[in-house]
Image (cartoon, rainbow, N blue to C red; front, top):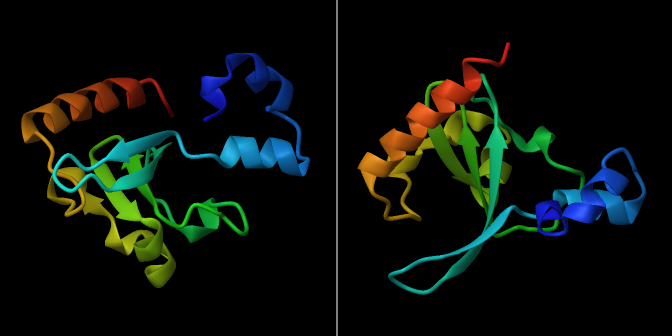
Length: 124
């Protein structure tokens, strides 16, 4: 969300007061299910090792209907806030193409996996 107001990102990046933390914790996108019209927040997290768990979130994370998409070096995963809370670990990470909340084109997912692999090839 901080990317929607580009002038502010440089001013809040290293600030730890409540408003700056809230802005930085806002979800990246709002997505709508094309079948039923349901709206969800979507957070994209880049993790070379593909690991993501509840401890990666700010305390009192307010977006309980958020879905997290974790982009790793080898795959793209998804997990809802509720699933993350229940397990408190990344064991429930589901490959994006199998995630029940989305109906996505698997060929496009494969294409984005290629982008992720190229991105992570320069990350140690």
